[in-house]
Image: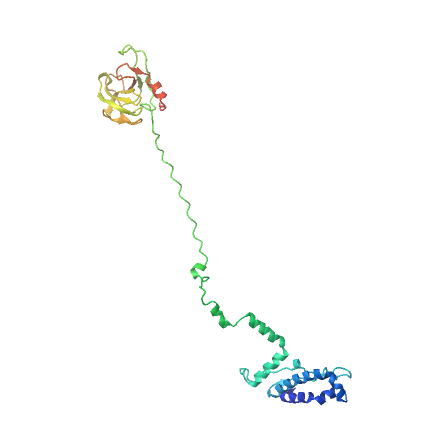
Length: 311
């Protein structure tokens, strides 16, 4: 392996015009013009390489072994050194990139690999310097950045408790328009039953078998006509109904309304008893067409005819 200065001198000797003529095997210079143009290009490139090699004292080059040129072939096929055959060792001072040795080595590297230079040029065009990157995005608001708390996936919350069952609706009592005076009580003496002990000769009302203290209800929307003692009827209450009829309650033990008071169907007007001319606790109930004795009609038929059904 020879040093670069020695190799450079040998290349300079090889590229002399006379030596080129000798390599071709031609004894005269008259045959040279046919190859003059190619020879000039080769001589120029080789001179640059040789001159650079002479400036590198510490480098080394390896010349490829060339086969002797056959007669009649191009004299430049057998050239001693090709630009791509040179191999350079690393310079002694790798950090020095501005000295003459580093410049020459860089030039030789570009000559050996010309494709890399164009690749670097295209790469530079496609990717501008990093110094311009901040300027391109300097004025853009950082909208994509989010706090870590927002970027993190939301933790799975505990399942919501099952809704409490809705309370059962309160059973609102149905507002009565007409009602029995003693709902559910059995009848002990029906209306118009013949009986000589009565002044009219028959029973003028309907008797309900109820014990003393049983609540008694207004049979319809009405106004209290009288509330007090009534001789053979004992304590009684008389109501004037909305259709002009009258309802009479007799033998009561307690009076809960007063004359002139307005009551609605289903309101309590007093309690049953055994007062007056009575043979036992019961409610004597009449529906009168006028507020007089014996001006009566069938109480059960009348109430049922108006829609009362709680007997």
